[in-house]
Length: 444
Image (cartoon, rainbow, N blue to C red; front, side, top):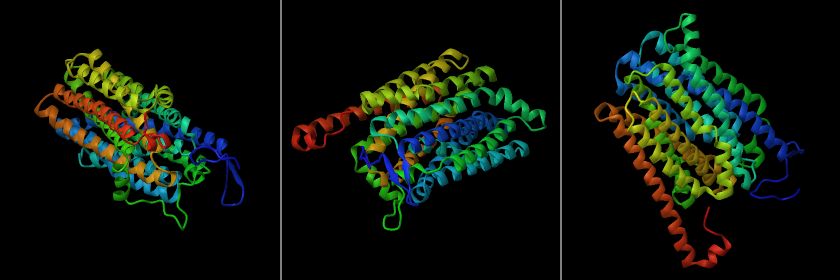
């Protein structure tokens, strides 16, 4: 066998005594994840795009509408680490399948909320749908398990791009196609979107169960067997992150990216609705925002591999400031400004999450990655949930502009954090040049 970088082999022995061709397994893995992401993306956005509207329709409260929408991030935050524990114990496939099935159950609960007009079913259901969001996000790490280091961010970007087709399509047709189809068969407003999402989450789970074989994390050697348990407790995984400069910056970047995206997007549909804009305009805004998040992710991944993670994180912070200010200073009836600002925020999320995911993955050995990645995603989703919950209160008691100003401040914090990391690395290199000549500090 020929040794290659980190610590993937050209071929690896299977438990049955045969061997796996790593490149062939990786191609099959990526194709499978692309297909599941498309279905999972449609399922997620089809329901999420109408969550705040359904909540407002049931309760008439923007605060409760914000809470319902934020439940997606709450569910994703709660589920991220337990899903990672399943993957660390048994591989990527069982974890992804579990996540998609639970998301489907959640979407059915949201349908029940629309039918019964009982608000309590909606945040619970959307929280379970949020597990589908955590599952979709976990696929980027599954794609990176067998990727070569110099292709890691590019591979993450490619899989994230699959969400463009799913989420973009879902945002365009949720209100214009899925919802009318639901009404045509006797379902109330917005139920058709959630029902479609429930079915597509099941399809995504079936794709993973049938096609994700062999399991990429098993092939990479990241699943514990007997003598070595790779399931780290959350406290241990978080301690590893806090003790690693790369990982700290990566998780901070993911938290900022998620919080600014969720916080501003949670109330934007209602803000546009207050300005008298149509459902079609809201759908186009969502589609444009999602295009910003996902469509250029392969390019962002290549840029992160070629020019380094740190410049991409700086660019993420700058784009966050620009997008938030553009959307925030646009009046509610201003379609172009709000759509443009939210699209730029989508770009910010893309640069931040892809660069940070690559940075976090390369900071730890393979046997620690699943648990550490889960802990990082849990922090990211939890911060997004806090932002989503806060968004409703900020808009209710202050304004949509103040919400976007808060997002802009987070973007500035990210830029300063990257600068501080680079400054600290430079000082450490000057203080002990021999250590860094052997094991250089990340200058990328």
